[in-house]
Image (cartoon, rainbow, N blue to C red; front, side, top):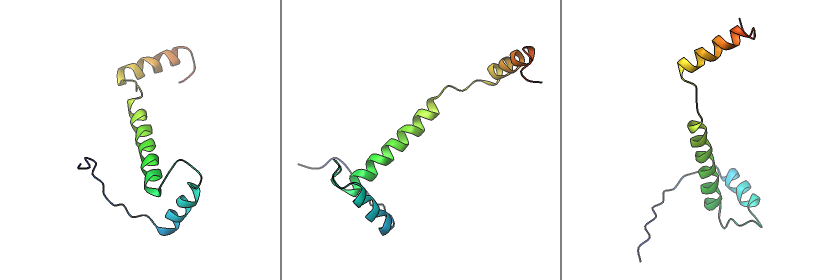
Amino acid sequence: MADDKKYTTVSIPKPLYDKIKELIKDTGFTSVSDYVTYVLREIIASIEEEEKEEVFSKEEEEKIKARLRALGYID
């Protein structure tokens, strides 16, 4: 049975590897690679979520600024 997953090697400094190895003792992570993969997935998900956040269009932003000026909050 062939493994459909493909992997690559990423080098990290040995002291960092050792710190991670110590950090994951007595956790559900079975290897430094598993932990690093988990962390990277979390970071990517966070970045993707930030990118999805709704941003005001230029027109909407100008309307908001005009309203704030009318209310005396900005000059």
